[in-house]
Image (cartoon, rainbow, N blue to C red):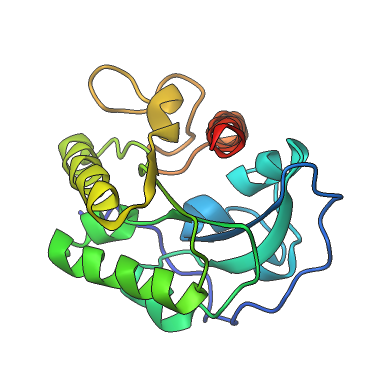
Length: 201
């Protein structure tokens, strides 16, 4: 069974968006897959959807500076497609499709290194992937290794998905409509947790 996110179209690069808000707390860039892109009409341009966690980081007082996110994207696709972004902090939520397609974590780690190098922002936050109802143990194992990688690289690790997850590693009630993608309410919980962690530094 393939449980990853299907692609909705080719990568379109990452043009600079119009300013998303007057930044009370600074500017963030984001790199990810469908969990980040979600229902955004034009993610890279800053037209963000209600099911994208980035919307709620902006609502909290951060400005969206750009980045790259596509449905179906693996970490390799992100590393091949993203470009430099001028921002205070880079937030990466990546790996759901790597887990779904059985990509070895060592490959994911090398791709995350490439993403960080290309984007060129010193302050890096990596976010735990949300639950995968069809592969709960896979998501847990990935996040454990991601935490270790972040420590090794000097990045910040945020388990912002904790508020979405039940004790058995699946989505809580109302947090997802399909067992893979956060619902609007799930995205709100995810974004609020990320914004809180960003504010706290």
